[in-house]
Length: 277
Image (cartoon, rainbow, N blue to C red):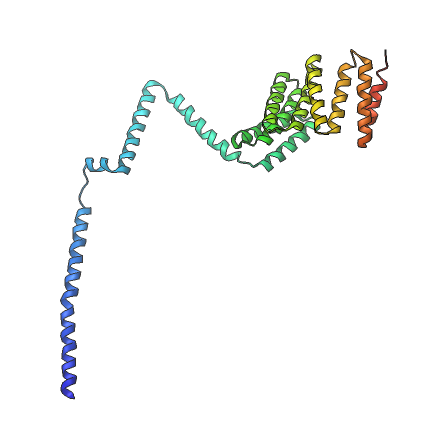
């Protein structure tokens, strides 16, 4: 029994002794590999090797191009032009960052501008619409852009900027046609008719009013039709009082059916001021 225990103890010691060299050799090989790697990393890279690196080659090339461009700009007197270019790029980036509003926020700005216009604050409304235009052109919000053009046309018309107003009406109509919005196009034509009437362009005003009335009738928009009839009455008032009276009474009839009593009284008053010849 004692002999068997001694034999097991001796075998365990021998097996333990046999494992020691294996561990030592493995550690030695790892140390050798580490030293080789350290030695390789410690070597100085040549210019050719650095230039062959895909990352460092681009960095060096960029630095060289920058230095040459700066030197050429200095000696050729191009520094103001270069600075203006970079300043414009920075300004554009700031604009894109600042005016990153969505359609809901832009329509709120348009509501605010419309309120300013109704209070006679046309200059402030004009400035606010300018901010809206930066957004709608960057974001391509067609419906919001159309509304902005229409509101811009009304403001420019009030300020007496007739060419700008006509251009804005034209832009709004083109966009409404793109989205096949007949009601929006009718509103633009009515506004354009008002503008041409104030400028004394009776034929253009009559054509715009007639097209607007047709679109309103197709869309069954009675209020829009009544407003157009009021415009037609005002247009004919100085030339054909009988026709003007007829238009005013037609508008009065529509306002009455819509329950719009103030507009009804105004239309009746205009009709009574235009007696038959």
